Amino acid sequence: MQKNFKEWHKNKSDIHENKQRPFFHEQEVWFASLGSNIGFEQDGVGESFLRPVVIIKKFNNEIFWGIPTTKKNKKGVYYFRFNWGKDNGSSAILSQIRLVDSKRLFYKIGQISDKDLKEIKKRIISLLE
Image (cartoon, rainbow, N blue to C red; front, side, top):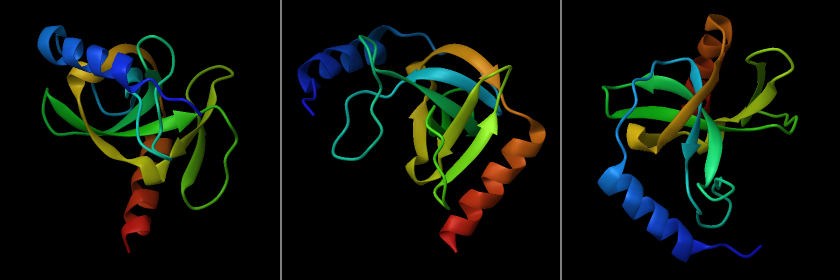
């Protein structure tokens, strides 16, 4: 798969220098500009390199832990299947948890349930043991 690192670096510079941070909360699902990444790290897609991300821990107005998602029905200890709206099923890719600056957030697309957020956190903790 060919990756467009040059275009991503232009976008990344623009996000860093010009993007305003939106207001966000834990539990929300946002399209975030995750970029073009190395190897098996989850990439964003399209011109803005976007991918849906679940916000699982907000540290302040600038940074949070996010988990990229996929529409594919993934199974196993590194995934958690959930629904966040009518006909919006996704799998959280637990092994891809990362610290994200809120400047990467583009727009909110939904919210997961309290129950699913608790389960995601429980599964992340179990991966660390």
